[in-house]
Image (tube, rainbow, N blue to C red):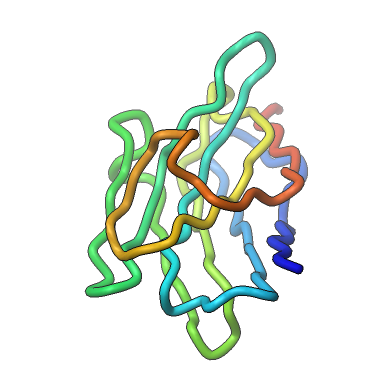
Length: 124
């Protein structure tokens, strides 16, 4: 049984930082690319960060590029999303998703597994 479990969400002030974690189990972690998506109220779920399982290449949506970083610890089967200089518009439920293969994709339909999501609220 595949599980992706997010943690680290919560309330953060504008300009602050937050680190999300996604712990995977039940899958061949090294054969899956893990990405982060988010869904704000009334909006579609969209991808924002991804790291290739093959060479560690990273990909970011324009909205978070330069502020978010993504990393993975294969031994711990964990992917991290470091969120810096957060803005109110970063408020959303954040999901990690696993896709078989080494190529990143922000297409929701391309993902094989999803976490349950975690709330991130940016507010003063």
